[in-house]
Amino acid sequence: MAAQIYKEKRFNDYREIINHSAETFKDKAAFQIKVKGKEGYRYVSYEEARDLYYALCAEFIQRGFKGKKIAVTGKNSCEWSLCYLAAATVGCVVPIDKEVSAEDAVAFMKSAECVALFGDKKYVDAIQEKGYDAEYHDFSFVWERNLKISEEMKDEIDSIPLPKDECQILIFTSGTTGSSKGVCLSQGAVCANIYSTVQVVKITPKDKTLSLLPLHHTYECTLNFLLLFSKGACITYCDGLTKIKKNLLEYNPTILVVVPVILKMLSKQIKKGVAASCPKRYAKLFEEHTLGYAMRRTPLPLRLLIKRSIRKQLGGDMRLFIVGAAAVEPHLIEDFDAIGIEILQGYGLTECAPLVAGNCDFYMNVNSAGKVMPGNEMKIIEPNDEGVGEIVTRGENLMLGYYRDKEATDAVFQDGWFKTGDLGYIDEDGWLYIRGRLKNVIVTPNGKNVYPEELEERLGDYSEIAEAIVIEGRTRNGETSVKAKIVANLDELKEKFADLDVSDAEAVKEKIKMIVDEINDKIPDYKRIRIIEVVKELEKTTTAKIKRYGKNAE
Image (cartoon, rainbow, N blue to C red):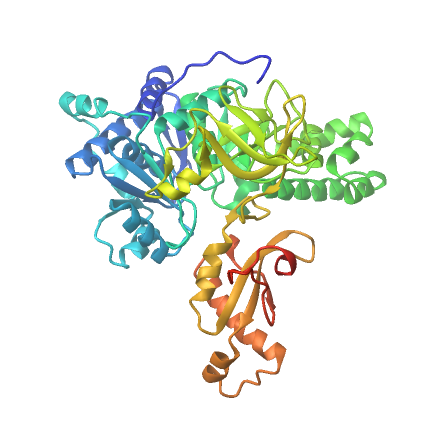
């Protein structure tokens, strides 16, 4: 717990946030949107955003969506945000990853019994072709609304109950029906997380963000949309990861919510630029060492020039990076500190809406994921001799449970504490140190979660594959990657490829690779299997289950 906290307003639901912001920041821009095909921007004020929200709520009610599940998909946008807010108010919003296949999106919608889908035309059309019985609308729907609604309708919207014990946000955490989990969150849980965060991280109406990470994740949605919206900040949207530098110069943001891989990319680009432009006698410093190390060994006048130049490349006003989803290398925090930009790293999960612990304005430790957030509790259970055990937490930000899965829900709750499945330890001063995953999940360098069971299920659909296990692997440069160890069904391969010499290991591997490539084409890039190892057998337990340890995990 912080020794000091900011005194901030607490909200119970999204409707309170929207009305408060519209009243407090009335004419200020909530969203700055690039106009397609034209130069310039459209600015959506907080008052206009509120009116659009109520108009969408009214439309949803009139279409019979009240109390129903409503899916939202597509690129980050003002339209996505408004549809999300309205859907979560009228019924339950189901944010769907735009990167999942249309088949998986339909599976999620069927599982949730969604009555409608809103999104970018590209994704809506692809999903609609799969034939699920629901209403489909592209985001142009948002701007077609008649903003004038009756007082009776507004009263009806304002009277919709939003209790903390009912699911208003349903987030699927995996990409296949067989192993997917639906996380049920209330608006109260998300608002509790926002309240915890604003008590220790100062956000003001002067702030502006560039939204980079997918909004269907609670990390981006809670911290870089809803939280900023509650504080009167301005939200802009990135045109794509390859356009970050260009967008930084266009929008001049003050805050970025990122994953470590983005910090690495920016640091690398900055170092390369400085090395190419600074005097030759100092260029080698930036080529061979970290940015922070090189800056400390550069004369003050040159250091100030470099710092000014770098900050200009980042838009000129950048002050804060919030980073999560994967561990941050301490030197990256020091790198950006050297140019006057603070990095606050934290730890969280979708089930916690999402933040559990973090660094903040009042305490900082570059080696730690932070301290428990205000209003929450955190401890370690079943620690080993080194104090490392499973991280558990409790607080108002916790999920209600997994969607229609009492067994899975009961397995992660113990006397009100949520078992995160992550390993770590807490030192005597309350700093949390993450030491690995208790679960099987693989965390890629960009902070994405890959669930092995999902990929194993897909591999198992092919008769040419007898057995498979998906584990964490390492690329040649040492980065985390997805690896599959596969036992080929030689009889099936021989039947399918009559000219195949099954004694030729490389030829067999080539055929297996064709199957893996076919699977990879159907899933998001971050989930793709990058390393393939064809083995003769996999070790099993006495109950014939494939072991996830020992030689199988090598």
